[in-house]
Length: 291
Image (cartoon, rainbow, N blue to C red; front, side, top):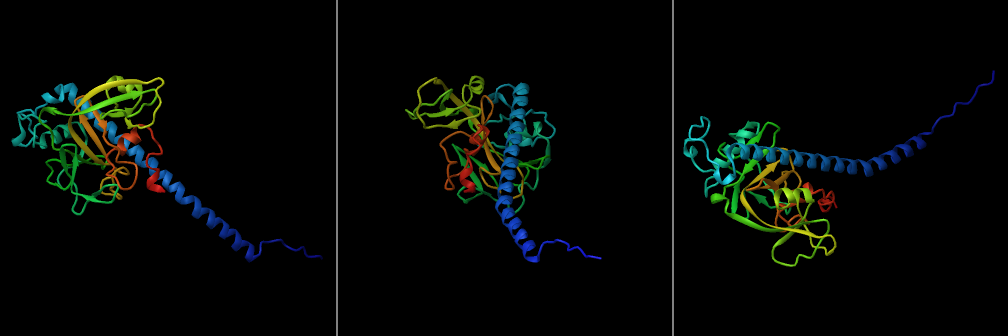
């Protein structure tokens, strides 16, 4: 009987194959993880934005324009110090937080944020307070009066507020083209439908390129009542502006991604305007983080 030789891979061939697989995995897995992380962070931002805008719309339908918002004097679950008080009043931040919590499913109040929790700017600087415009947000008060955790584990930090929503931002909004930023007012690019609704960009992106064709401008003074910072994954890292932490403006018309001078273009900025870039659909807005 003639024995047939069995063909098989040599040990050297197996080792070479495993080495090639390892190299390919090392090159592709980080990219796949980065893509997955960025998609998850964007989805969380969109969810937080939807939650905030829906809460505002419900409050406005119930209480009217924000300048008229008052904490009901007979509210059983409101601190006695704010009952019957105007919400948007200098130095009074509990009223705004209380109103917001009535329309958001709250998971926990006291103890949020936990000890040792820190938010960082894009630059890496740690923040215990955030100075936005002319108001501050306390990021370390865990008493339960202001900051809270929603049922989906997001951390919410409403700001101290302005007296009667008097703080204003003068915007020039535009769509269907670009134009020079030819005066001191900041110009934004957004879709026509959003500009028609708000008179200012709900989905906004500062621009600097020039092209005069098909330009449509909307001038509008937006009255800012306060701000909200949201950490979309709670205590989980990285707790960093523009990645998992985002800023929204609470205007007299609605909640909009934070607008202003572009501080989301490199790792030296604060990262407050990253929310407007991402909500506006600029999928490459944070490429510099992963370079």
